Length: 327
Image (cartoon, rainbow, N blue to C red):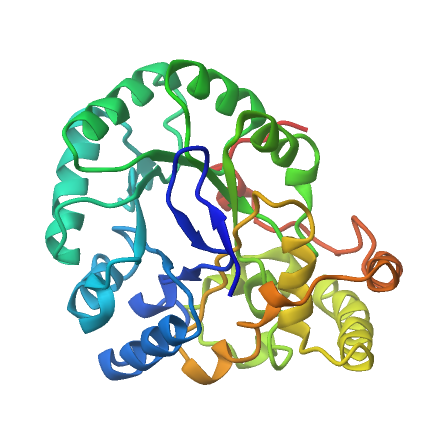
């Protein structure tokens, strides 16, 4: 496993992190024992960066991490998030009282006295980002967090925040079928020395071991609300996805390893966080950091999955209202 800095002044972490949303049951039921096996396998492969949030399973993901015997190994770095209130109605709260209270609860569930990175999970539109950053600096001064991050924000918000106090990381969706960060955000992160942490780098499962069938997903699976997983968009996307899988096979790689290798190739400040609750599935992509892309593979991928190839939006209108749009 190779390592990359978690932003300027941040700790060195594995070039690939582990998204821990699935430990909270977001993609189906799991057990603590299965989660522990996955975490053990991740650590054995050199993965040292764990990403969770207070709302993943309403605290279950953090609790699972806190009970994992390996969490307190010295080189594990933890990121967690707060500000989403599920409601109803769903809303965001970036106030100091809310963020501090939620952070303290997260630390208690995790069984630690601080985390390396604490994100604003979504920005509260009416609250100046400068005020929010001042809250984060007080949490840093209190020793509760090593640095702060922002999620699903625009380059402009990053510049405003960074001018008050350096931001450590930005986490937005980015993958071979969600390319918006290429329109300024990845470049701004590089300019400012901020780590860019792509979530859903495997396209919410479409670049996994097997292509998912939306018809078999449980009715509670949020992917069913996403246009890309609904016909006619899904059937059109399937043609491209099958071509990508053939391309990966010809390259001697799993689809997930190739998808992650492509992300890592976009810049040395990118640290993707694929999610899985299965130690077996983790083995499909854990070697991606050690697989540099050749010029031939780059050119081939650009033909198989060119920018803008996906049919349908990554979010429906309600979901899209929770993220900053800047293009």
